Image (cartoon, rainbow, N blue to C red; front, side):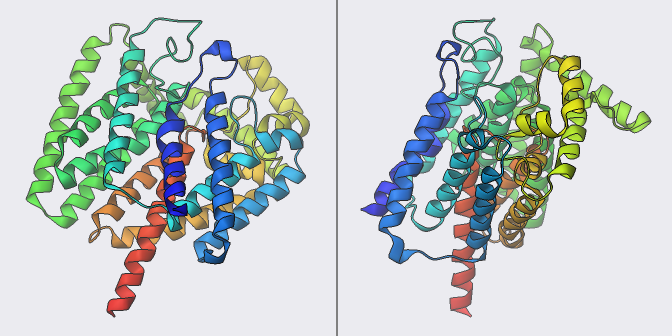
Length: 421
């Protein structure tokens, strides 16, 4: 019974929380997501307490709990402790959220009970989000309903970059789902996922797309199964048709101009190296963030308190950036730099080791285990786009859910192998 309750709560987190979004008149579009996440996280915590006698920990679990402990220390020493607990305005990725992510990972790994309808429910919901993003692409400005309508193809996440973050998780899953299982719903998901990826014009998702398509191709070459190549070819053809159709429908040349800008920046890098204005100003933000990391390398400036840390410890650089761009920096636009700056370099190292302990064994097992192959490529996709993007409460819970599933699968496969031996 307890496992069923945990399964229901986890299902709400990955299926219901992502679709909750409020219009601008509510003052913050993420308010419903954080309420849902906190309530679900509290229930998961209570359920875990009732199962205290069943607790077990492996090396990966210990690492991620150390990560949580470092988040607590970072919050205590934060430049703005209250902000670090709750999270910055409309981001809400403070200490509470970090601990909920860890709860999601642990509960998925040990207590989640998969059921036949789970995958199909998720596929339908995620396809609907992608379709909604495609509709948004053609909607004019709508001040009252922004960001639900009138701010581009942002799905239910309030920002087109966040939509790109979401697509980087679901699109490779749809592609591999179709290749492995030959189900039409996955082909439909692949097509609408690709279209929404193009329309959200998030270059981080485009980079991730190139990486995981190459990874899938390598996987298919290694496995040498004709039926998989045939289905992959069908997907490529559908993507080409979709791309041509989208470009022809893009009367304002939004996508074409974004491609042109990306091409221009790549040429600029080849000729003159990195420029502060490249990547929509990300290079400049990364440099300022690195300056902050050098000043608070152990525990950072406080969970989700980058804005306050920069204002207090890198005041001149931060002030000049605000004057020049008329916007303040509240995220590093690179998840790894964000962790190092707000929680400290040790926290980043622990996080990367934790991810490595999941990914390395997974890569070694993907040839024989299709489910592990799907999760591994999805994780790699997320990690690639995370280099240019930020974590958000609408999508990060899905990533932590996947980490839990992958860790569970690795343990199961390893255990089965040791029993056979």
